[in-house]
Image 1: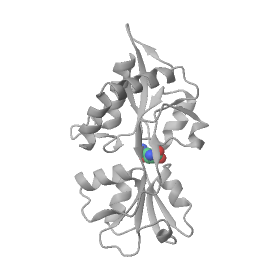
Image 2: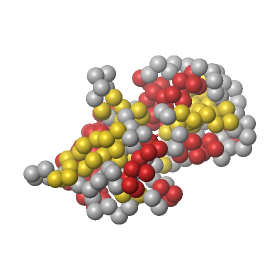
Image 3: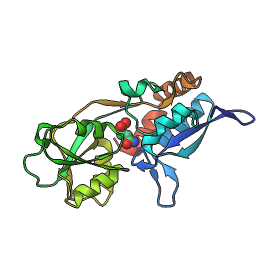
Image 4: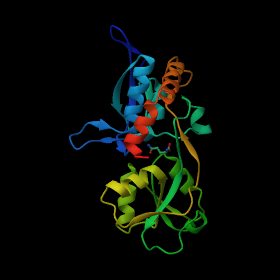
Length: 229
Ligand code: GLN
């Protein structure tokens, strides 16, 4: 681990699992792209470090940070109290929340309460999985990727999916997921942060870069590009 040095600037090895559009995913020709990708590159430019991505599954990211085999991660990762014991998070950079998705026309599912005893698909290791596991009597099916959970719903194999609202909405808008809709209110308010090893010396650099791009309009441009808002 540690920060590698080129002639002028350090290069951070950044863990990423590019299966979470629009935050991190692959373009048709296989390049890693997305909101988080543009964000960390812009943070690096602002704060004087380069970025080298390393593919790591979402549930392997915190162990890799703890082992020091990567310097940081971009993973639309929610800042939670439990995770904050294992890694140090940057300042928050994105506000999200969990949403319930069902097949269009489903009756009687709008709230967490309505999901008691239902079958729910989630992505392993996520806040959505944790929320689903706390529902009395619910049967949980776990998947490696958010879109696989949604496909299971589309195929009629589960009653609902619980995951980050921006990802579900993007998948409905762009993917082959007609027939699925988000219902009810957001279940949570969550903030994404960039996780680094506990007390990493790079933390202040990353925070400085984030503050710069939030203030100079770069963040707003990246947001506009991916969320068209
Ligand atoms: N925001 C969710 C979490 O942190 C999901 C992140 C993801 O699947 N990449 O658990």
